[in-house]
Amino acid sequence: MAAYPYEILDLVNSNIVERVGSAKWIFGTDFPMPYQGRMHRMADFVDAVRALPIEDSIKEGMFHENIKSLLCGPDHKIR
Image 1 (cartoon, rainbow, N blue to C red):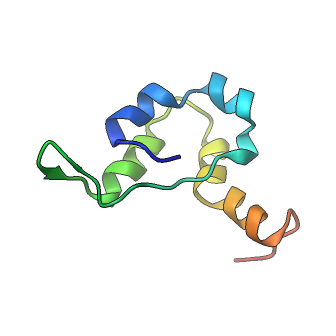
Image 2 (image 1 turned 90 degrees about the horizontal axis):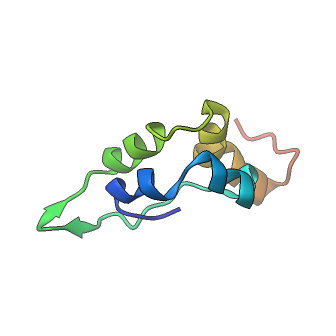
Image 3 (image 1 turned 90 degrees about the vertical axis):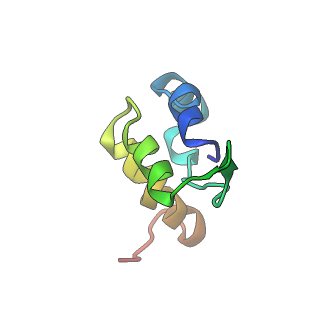
């Protein structure tokens, strides 16, 4: 996923996550991305995902588990 922080809440919801599949979402940004003369902070993107009205386990997948599985396989042992 990559979008302006304010777009994330409009674009990502439980319906689209289910349709695409929760294991296929990986957090990413276009950081640094200026908008209206202001540079967003990385925390703005993280906070936008944390505010999504979806289960915390899906968010954990977006932030950590899905990329580990993609890079290392479903039985990954990265700590």
